[in-house]
Image 1 (cartoon, one colour):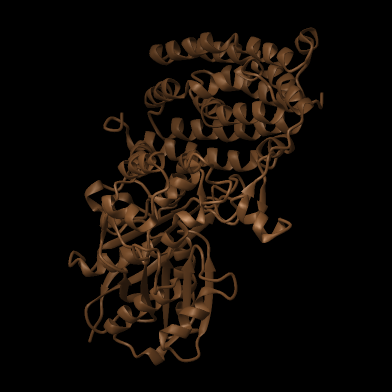
Image 2 (image 1 turned 120 degrees about the horizontal axis):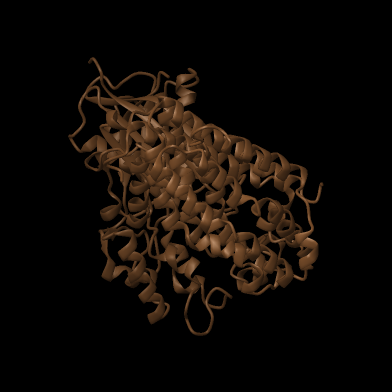
Length: 378
Length: 224
């Protein structure tokens, strides 16, 4: 595949927010909620993150503006003119608006002229869908250069006003655990990469060797959801099926939820994908120099290590590259945030192999990308 | 454990994990499992599931014992014998659950295997009758995996969908609770059994066959 990551950028709004400052931004629901928050933070290991809301809950940002700011950062370091970018793919979990897609709004803010766009909406693996689409567009010769951006603005959904008066938050102030968990897990930001049909003239680029993504929705029910309420026989009722919008809101349809048990049931399937790639000879764990694995919690990482070791597909831990603990879990922006930090880390050498892994809990997706460090000839 | 596992044992773990993934995917397409997983299970579905499982589970201790008698490796033989002892009265729990779910004890005891269970059981006895049938660890992986990974959530879901008490789902919930010990024992047995490529391939192949036949058993509920 003739497609290369030649530049990257990111935008994280505001200062890093410590754990003890989080509630100043996302608000306080109850002492019990704060207790679950501390428990969640111990498990996920995150120490700081960024929020696009101010302490009073107001904001001057949208997911589209965060994405555009990340694109500005990429283009400031790109070795091509904006005019050569012919394609823009965006990934986000919850767009600013229901209609139209995020890519339109990002394009509007980006300063780019008429281009081809694609809006990918999933959860974390939306980033890999956008990455693969842009890589194939470039490799197929459709475009000389393409931009891929992931953006998340989750904190706005976590303010107390989004829960009060709904069935998700009973009078005792104890939010359902599946909703509370995410308040202490997700945060805001955007990151982007530039993909070209040749390596950058100067400096290091990443050649895209292959990208693999598989859905396992054939066996998993939705595990992370937004916009629906569970009925009494285990099904999901979309918000739009309620008689009134008020009824849907009151039933708690608009809360983001994560079935935490299902997350642990998905792990073996995610690992199974790595095993498949090892058996097919596409991944040699010992030949991976940098392993960029998006994981939402340290506890999941520990379990992954155990299963991978048993099956001989453990990539030595000193080669794992993460920024989760300082930059937070930024969903569909995480993959590009990892790539940008890796590219800026100064630790890349020509010929090194990079493996990216992005699991998605939404309804179970697993994705991988294999990249090789190359040097352009100016 | 990981420090002593050979690349061959690790490859076997990968092969088994991948068989499991396909198995679990296929199970979701079986009508009774699809209804279970989507909250549409009927009481007669559950009774039929217990009735049909019992006719095959009653043989569990027997084929494992037969396999044990054909094993030259003493420690593996010992593990198989212990496993057989632990399993060979499990069918009684199934009968108790069947009665608690409104079924008739005499009826379940008088039942015969469905045509899928016939195929599964015949394969187990056939494989167990071979000299040194270590490949059967692949069969155990599938059957134990059902217990470890699916039985617990199924028991909870069945109890809540059908309003049944713990005494009606104890066969499934029991198998959902004893995973850690069984897994450690399985890993140990695999390290003893997988000594070359042929033994590794055999374990994974047995797992593939048993996964398909187990699904057949569930597809053919009450088709005797």
